[in-house]
Length: 87
Image (cartoon, rainbow, N blue to C red; front, side, top):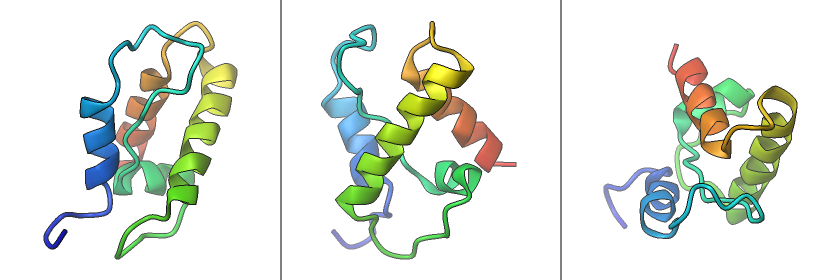
């Protein structure tokens, strides 16, 4: 849709599709935006991210979560990457 940036649909998934942040047996939707991509060292995107990039981000966030803070929700990783990328 015109006027919506590449992160719109990941934000939509995050807020609309995820119902239980404490359910660790499945990968929760997270927000892939420019700040997160920057923190991961991914190149800037001017259009849309392909769905494969979103899947890669979810897998990467799961791996980071296991290494950094396995007892915390994956949302902690998402927020940390967002803050790191915003600097």
